[in-house]
Length: 327
Image (cartoon, rainbow, N blue to C red; front, side, top):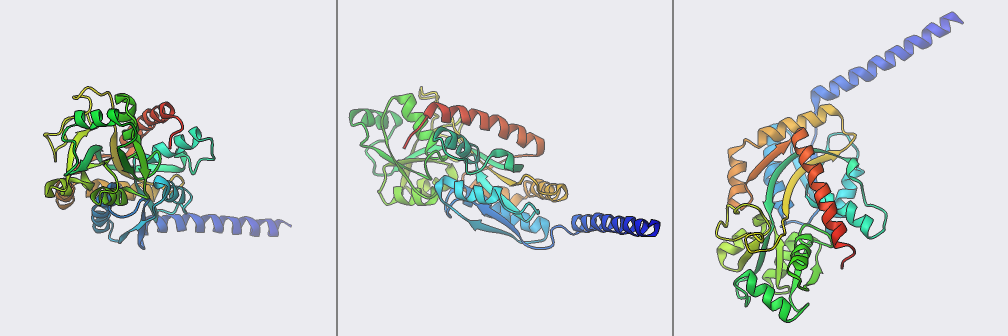
């Protein structure tokens, strides 16, 4: 009996040692294969235009390819839910926008089961933080925000705007403006920011609110024109454009981008990704690329990013509650 007990204890000890050794080896070799970075929007939007150069820089830092997968739909909810439930092994990452905080609150307002909850994610790093910009076609009849609002008041609902989806980062700021200016606009949701911009360029919608990175080239080319932005300081790529607050409307919306992983991701992988992100943030080429795209680096990581995210999520939850059920 004693011999059997000793054998059993020895086997348990060996298994424990094996498990511990496996963990050490895994930590020492991570990453040993490609890392997936899910972008929950179609190509062409802010998350994609920032996420791709960031993934390229991370690839160089980590020594393994960081592969972008676009999985759009439902304003980002489909991709973010998939990421929340992905295997937490360090090889599944998410690059998304501030809409990550909006969708669970919108689900509450709409009285439906949440696609995911924020506790399912662990934040790694914020890369950019830009105010959304109100843009219209170059040949639109409005050259100022005042003209845009006057036209909307004269013919309620006649002006429409595109977005990346209901309660997304292109929908919420427009609703904020509509409430603040006491106007009625017609909302046309698309599967992502890229398709919404394409619709504006094709004159299928009249306006939209988006990050500077997705429209700055079109503004420079003379095919789109900005009327205002939702920030608190000048937009570096278009310093002449005034903020809504400067124009008398108390509306603010920052469209930030950042990387997350599933909450149960091992700490060694989290730390490796954080270290790589911090190194990537110093990459001169990445900074130049983002600056040229109109979305300059605005980096935060670790606990600092987590604190920012929690505060921003609460602020956005209040905005969604105030909006209530909308179409």
